[in-house]
Length: 334
Image 1 (tube, rainbow, N blue to C red):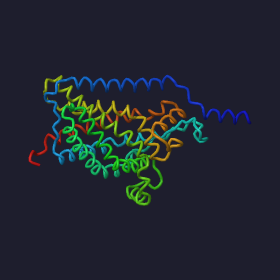
Image 2 (image 1 turned 120 degrees about the vertical axis):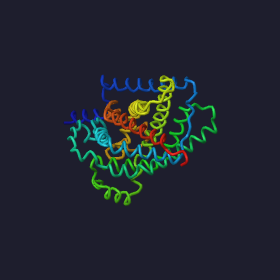
Image 3 (image 1 turned 45 degrees about the vertical axis):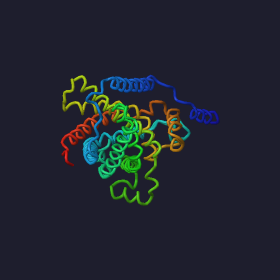
Image 4 (image 1 turned 90 degrees about the horizontal axis):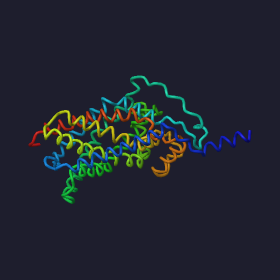
């Protein structure tokens, strides 16, 4: 018995061996980062003619962002729920006994369960879009005044990063309530019960603030920067011709690349907000990511990447299609 206990305790401290699948995930992440950097470098080397970033009216930008956000959330919400449930599943080797065995696969949810938390997500879309696009527009104006020689793609990336910091104050409570509803946490079954729990403990709404910020800033910076870069490249290849397929194609490509790169931060953020995080609940983001990789293997950081990449590819294509359409048809005198 003493030998068995010793062996069991020793297995908790050992990191899991790196398998071929985990090595493939690391290689794909590195290749994706190289592709993203290469796209930005090629786009920056293109002539800036016709690529000057012209800011739309603030009201138009808020309306376009809100409509695009609500539409993509309502259409592709089941993929978001599947991603959340995949990220929460654990196969830990760490310090807690209940995680010493692989977790049983979760049963396939019924169709209506895939829409749990949709009301909260739609309700918070308008204030989130208002804060994000207002900060994005103001940051772009200030940056273009401070750095007039900045290329449009870098300007879009930096302004989106600054807007992410401001919008996190709205986004963290939204994701907390949404994630709790998606995993069927007690007291978060309906919109009314979720809001009641939020009023009872407002501080709990900002669980995962640090991990959300670590995910949203690089995500939005790369997403809007890559979208601007790929759009400029596509128009240069088409000799400046306007095609309705440019916005969805460039949005899908940027969404898929950036969602894969930010998957580890999303896994950590989801676990913290649903309350399934163990020792990685506290500490810095980097320390928590290292702890997950040590206890469950590097592949745990990319758990749920397939539905998330599909989700962000199709939703980004739809979002930028709606976003660009609203801006193009917005009345000039508004």
